[in-house]
Image (tube, rainbow, N blue to C red; front, top):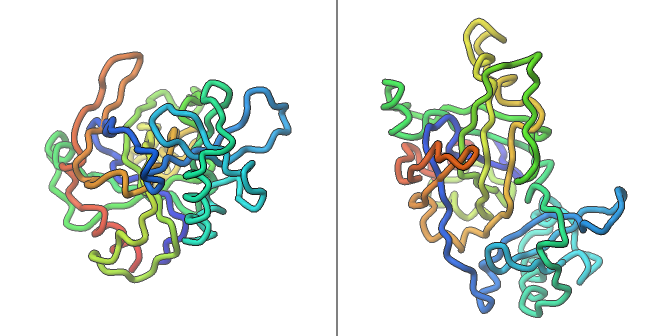
Length: 276
């Protein structure tokens, strides 16, 4: 399978929690950038979204779309531009022109309309132990539709006429930055552009064997069932993506709190497996 502009959430179906490191970006290291998609709050309904970069958590946004009109206003097209477009963005970030205050924008999902959203179930030792399940020898995949993606502060809709068993699971999501086919595990990280945070929202009653033949597609793919963001951090920012804490709170109460070190199948193995 060729993987192109893939959003790959790697912690789905885990009863774990994830918190991303709070280390700050350095302005002297433009490779450590947080990509965001946003709209100005003072615009009208027809205002197009814009692509920007933050250099620190909750920091001001460098408006790439305004600095250079040739710069795409979305991350998927930006990734299609390859290394040359990334180097151009780094130069623009180094100059720190056209800064926008975070309070003046609406943050959108950091990536929209990816070709694929592929997810790994039962990929945490803790989650398997919790359910008395055998550790999968190979990765176990399911998918979500791109139409499930919403922003980091958007509402999740529970269609009560469809489901009454809504559930959540925080995930580490891996953004594939280029077309990838038949790579070995030691080559796989060259395809990774960065990471973001995802929520895997599920309609649990649709995961039962009595509904949709036991397939998970409807359970995972209702509208708003994949909140993302707020940003995509470049892979250089996380020295070891297998050593981050993932945390989920609901109404201020911690529901999940665990480490990505508990992954059974690591990111290079998963990307290589999919690329075959």
